[in-house]
Each structure stands twice: as structure tokens, then as C-alpha cells.
Image (cartoon, rainbow, N blue to C red; front, side):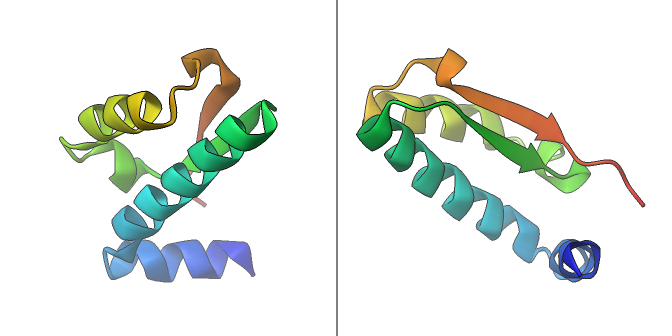
Length: 77
């Protein structure tokens, strides 16, 4: 179940690394396809100081428009 996976990832702090990988891969796909995508963020993702600088750097790296990516916040279950 996705909820179980997310709980384990959050409990072990792997969610932060997973989020960075997902953002990087998604931005690469946006650049290649021109499509719009949504990325889910957990509460833990929002607690880290590096998230916004990482997002801005990755947007610049792939030269994509910020409006091509939507972020959704996962609710705790």
C-alpha cells in the first residue's frame, strides 16, 4: 500500500532523499516533454530548509517554467 510505504519512508527519514530524486526526475521529464506534472510532498519535506533552494536550483538546471509543476501536500492518515 502506498500509505505504508510513505509511513516507513517518513519514519526512516528516507522520504527526504526520495523526494529529491522524484523532483529531479520529474523536472527532467518536464524539460523533455513540455507537459505539466504534479509532485506530492509530505509534511517532513516541508520541514527541511533546503527544499526551496533545491527547487529553485533544479528549475534553473532544467530551464523549465515553474508553472509546469504543481506541488500537492500529503495529508497525514
